[in-house]
Image (cartoon, rainbow, N blue to C red):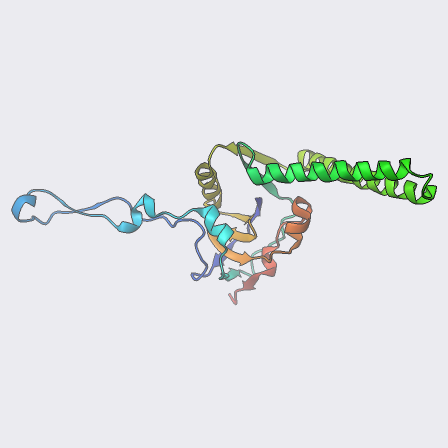
Length: 233
């Protein structure tokens, strides 16, 4: 989740809510007397929307996606500059999933297979020319070294230059609570799961193939001024 500073703006009412809007959960008591067995007891009216069991999951809704986009209106008289520094929030779940375990096993098998094939080609250089064997081995080793160096460089950039908050949770419900708590904060722009959320409302949904999904944390924060409309006042 990428978080940046939000300017002073207004969001259209048709923007979909990502979080659950604050509802009046306290029961309303009336002083009107009732008849029969309920005499002397206050009349309590409780809305079904306040039932916590009907609350939807924020993470599930973001994964499913929002089809609508809300309009952002900015005052042209207010100074604004796009935020260049972002704050990153990482919420991890304890344990390793089966799919990720299988993917790691497949990656290791591919690495071992490539190493065996390159070694066999180099060992059988008497049957082949020496130059193709050396070229294949050099390409395999360069790809492995490049991947490792890139991963180490990204990690060092995150820990040195980017403020990061890492939270480890046990269940998906606990992660959903933390995500909703962050999205409820006002004055910030949250980029999470391909959506741009401001003040709890979705104002933009990016495509599946965007710079944020391709290069990840190396992408710059979104410029709200590009997706906003200037007010005439």
